[in-house]
Image (tube, rainbow, N blue to C red; front, top):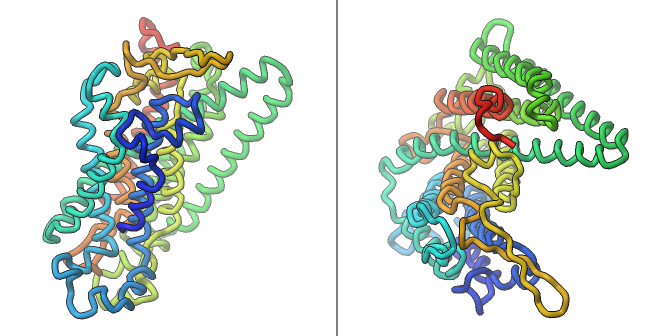
Amino acid sequence: MGACLGVCSLLSCASCLCGTAPCILCGCCPSTKNSTITRLTFSFFLLLGTLVACIMIIPGVANGLNKLPWFCSSSDTFAGTVNCNLLLGHQAVYRMCFAMAAFFFLFVIIMICVRSSRDPRAYIQNGFWFIKFLILVGITVGAFYIPNGVFTTVWYYFGMVGGFLFYLVQLILIIDLAHSWSQSWLLRAEDGNTKCWYAALLICTALLYAASIAAIVVLYIYYTKPDGCVHNKVFISLNLIFCVIVSIISILPKIQEVHPHSGLLQASVITLYTIFVTWSAMANVPEKYCNPTLLAIGYNATTSSTSSSTAAQWWDAPSIVGLVIFILCTLFISVRNSNNQQVNTLMQTEESSGEAAVHSTGDGVHKAYDNEEDGVCYSYSFFHFCLFLASLYIMMNLTNWYLPGSSDASFTSPWSAVWVKISSSWVGLFLYLWTLVAPLILPDREFN
């Protein structure tokens, strides 16, 4: 764990660890916004912690460490203080993610109501990276000294709420990406090569809907039975109906009047993501008869049933796909520059609030840098809140949303995890629908 976390310090520039931005990145990309560099660095902390958590949960790591003569060979504790069971497996993931969540929640509190770079707290946001890294390492080390007890169970329910909210954050980012994608291609079609760009839009839309239809068929085949699995049938059918409804609404003439660049491309992206969340929910159904992908380590609740062959089954396919989407969304939230007013409102960002000043270097080259004296480019506190939720989401994703039992080898997949994912898909579809109909429902407000 220390070796992995130490990579971060090697990637930082010693001469500006307490400065306003990492000098390596700023030196290579002098025109890059300082706010973007800051968000990328915080996101790197999150991804680094995620990498450490992934390493800790790999079963082969535990077997390798047990072969070391100094690693818990003569007792059940490491260095006489920390229980060995807490250093690996789901217990380690819970503690690593607890440390990341605590770190980002600390910055949520510190950065509340920061309005401009004149606020002294803005210097904390954009600098002192080595100190921040030490704080993260300190919280991580301290997390492994938390007594086991009810900590894992209580933190599981915190993770469930955080995972639900981060599903919504992901969907908002996907809505933003879909709007930006469609708008960009439609503008290029208006500038020239109209047939080419419209053909590209049509092909991408068709492929996304084809993937969604194929996924729906697979869900019906593998997660439903003719004589049962009523819950699965209802969930899959409802989400299919809801996706069809929002797709139709997205191309209604009234919607096209207020959203000229809206269409089936955005709806197809949202549909595919909704089907993914449905698939993830079906993978948590606790009935083995209706869920062939239920992991053995989650289905069998006794230590004797979790043999070495099933102990390695930590991640299922939805969790792997969710991990990839998580990484992409984490990077996107750090570099996003949205033109969609509704999305900016939901995400507490407004890229135009901070003015871009232009500075001449004297050799005819003009370099842009952030001028946040009148207003910040994004909400510092809300950005850290999103990373806080991401820490909880990755904890749930790495442990398959399984509820830990009384022993380290006891896991169950509760119905609550299914309902959290299904309800998040419904709320997400409502949010997308709201971005379409808001200008019609509230005509007196400006949504351009």
